[in-house]
Image 1 (tube, helix red, strand yellow):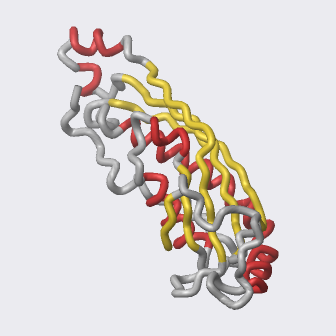
Image 2 (image 1 turned 45 degrees about the vertical axis):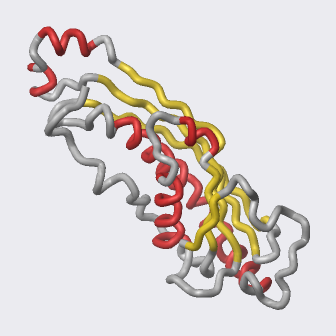
Length: 211
C-alpha cells in the first residue's frame, strides 16, 4: 500500500547527529562494510556510506584536504527490523482509512543495529575501535507518518545514526591521542607508510572512498 501525503525522508535521511569532536582528526579516507544491511528490506546499498561520509566530514575530521592521514572504517555487525501493528490495517481498510487521517498509524517499523568504527593510521595499524547500538521506531501513517516504502529505509538509517551518536563520545575521549598518532605517522603514501600486515591495504569486501 502506498500512502499519498506522507512525510518525506529527504531532509532527515542523511543528517548526522550534531555533536562534533572538540579536537578534530586530520583528514581520513572512509570505508564502509554494510554487513547485514545489504540484506535488509529497508536500507539501500549506498545509505550507510553516505551517512558515514557526512558524519566524518561534518563532525570527526578537519576540512577536506588532499592528504589523508589514515582511514575511518564503519562496520555494521547486526541489523534487525520488525514490523509492528499490521493487524490494524484490516480495521483501517474497513473504516475507509478514517483513523489514519486522524493520525492513527497503520503500523511501525522498528530497527535495532550494532556498528563499530575503527580509526587506522596510514600504515594500517588500528588506533582505536568504538562500538554503538542504535534503535529506531518509524510510524507508517497518512499525513502524520511515512509511507510503507520510506519507513523501513528510514528505520535502518535512523538506527545507524543513533549507533554513530553513541560512538562519538567514546572517540571524544580519545580524540587528542588519535590526532597525535595520525599526524605522527604521516599521510597515506608518505615516506613512512609501508604496510605492517595489520590489515589488508584495501579489504575486498569494503567500499573505499574519500569523504
